[in-house]
Image: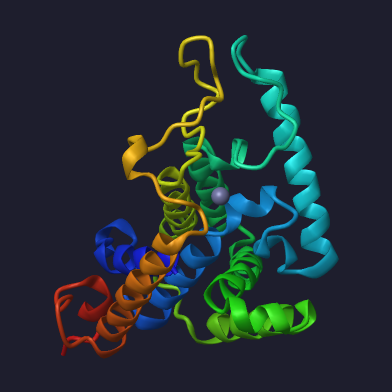
Length: 259
Ligand SMILES: [Zn+2]
């Protein structure tokens, strides 16, 4: 939900001269990609909701990601880092992962196979977004249903979205989503190795976070408060984007509708 909220805000803030989106469907697409990408880092945990998005396929991918992360940590760890037994919250929870995944998405969406890549990425990230935004529903629904729904929405978006944003801007939605996830984990008790494997003393994978007293429990009451807050921001932003009535009158999204 935080990915959707931040995605909607950024979609409106990016100026058209920079390749920003200028139509409502494209702004929603941007937010959809950001919402999905906000779940991407937890693909390193086969138990996570996101890893069930596409049934055995994403489950298998998740095991691969977790194992590769674990190997990567053990190959790069400093003399004071302990041996890594589980790849969760390691390589996919760094600033570099946010930048690399965004760059890869931007490359795919601006290259010669632009059309196919955009549909493919949209399908993948919408699948994650549905899991994230409708956790109760998607928990009960079979993964095939979730996959079908994301395919349908991706197809509809492709049919009706004018694709006004540049490949670079659409790719940035992935970085925005991943960074939102990292911000969320950053304020939890455990923190994340944000800058790993850059050395911090004799450690390379030390977890960083906000000062101890400000940290929250990963599945505690503060989680609910934040979910409510981000739901409200998302709904207000959706209203602003779709109706074009309030705060963002001079935003690029709404400018396209000016007479
Ligand atoms: Zn995480």
